[in-house]
Length: 351
Image (cartoon, rainbow, N blue to C red; front, side, top):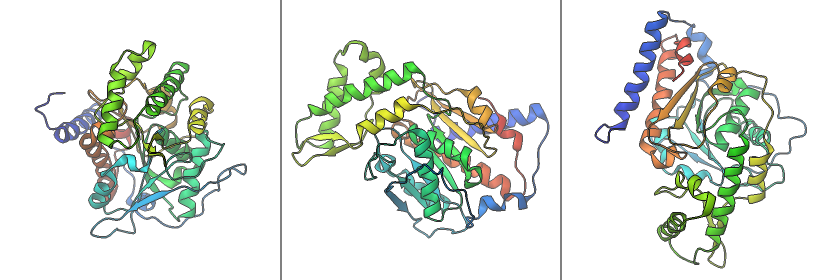
């Protein structure tokens, strides 16, 4: 990407160009009456199906961000879900930015076995999806906009396939509905084991800045076959969240056994379809490769948005770009059905 080009302009121009070209080629516009989208505006209390009977809920910690000028209670809130080994703090200032900009309430969640949420032996992707549905039901949230990274994106996508009427639109960062390949699972497990060893060697009571420097130093040293996979993950931002122990040393702010279960358990290919707007944001330099064909089977209106030069942690390493893309997506959807119509075929753009 040209460093002289401001990304917000690039992002807006990129989507506008793709939409314009698609509409020009197809030369048609599908219209829906405004009444069809009332449920997308209002967070009405509706009865939803409860999660599966064998689902056992756990305490899910969350943080609520209210718009500084007050929330519009008619608008569905935004729910942010973090990735593996992270927490609700992972999103930094992004949630408050969206709350103020959209006038919506914004929630950030700690997934089970992460952050301040309860630990549990059950930690597969389907259970994470049920956690989200259960959280929304218990909080009286009839509909939301889901923004999820990696693991949080996967569980959000699965939840939308289970309960499509509970989701206004979806933003999945570096997430795919298809299970991880064996190669990617092995890389995740090597990543987990390697950094666990590095973290165990962090001197007690050093600052966060010093921790980052210490880890980067270790990553730069040759580490056999791990070096190639670790390189693409190193950045100026910590790729996981840590917790300080009483003795001053650090550990993952997550249940390692639960993380391993999520990585290795996989999930069956869902049979359902989500017909709403779904944006899939991915880094062109990421080792995670999304399966567009599989996504299109379940999300026929999917829009694929590459971020040039980005790897896996787009919202961390490119927060302004990420914020602009999600904001633009929300604006496009809301403005289109505010006018009483929506470009249905627009969502079929395959980037």
